[in-house]
Amino acid sequence: MRARGQTFLDNVEISHCSQYGSLKAALRFEDTGGLPSNITNSALHHGEGVGVQIDNADRLTFVNNTIYSHAKYGFNISTSDQILIQRNLVSNI
Image 1 (tube, helix red, strand yellow):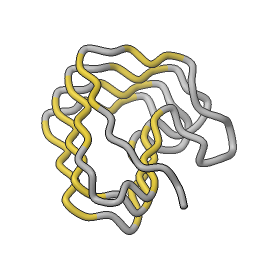
Image 2: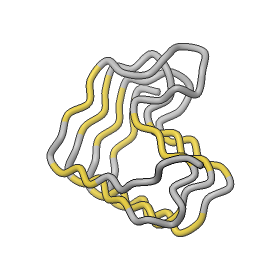
Image 3: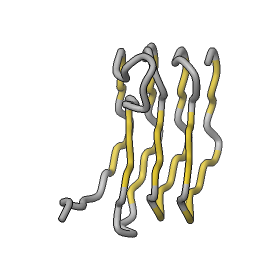
Image 4: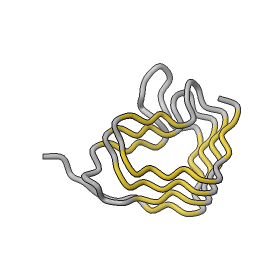
């Protein structure tokens, strides 16, 4: 069984993370078991892969973030529910 947890980031910078040619993102949520997580007022930038990868995750909130200079996708979401993405800037993807 996988361990499940929650993530609460506010005013955080994530720089030069993610792997080129893969779904190993700078920030990844997978099989969260419905536990809520919040990412607010943060920046993810200069990654060589995906900015945010969400797979089979529920109850995630992304508000007032900046995601820029990533390869392929800013957000990549599949098989997930109750994802709030509000007032985010995604550019230079």
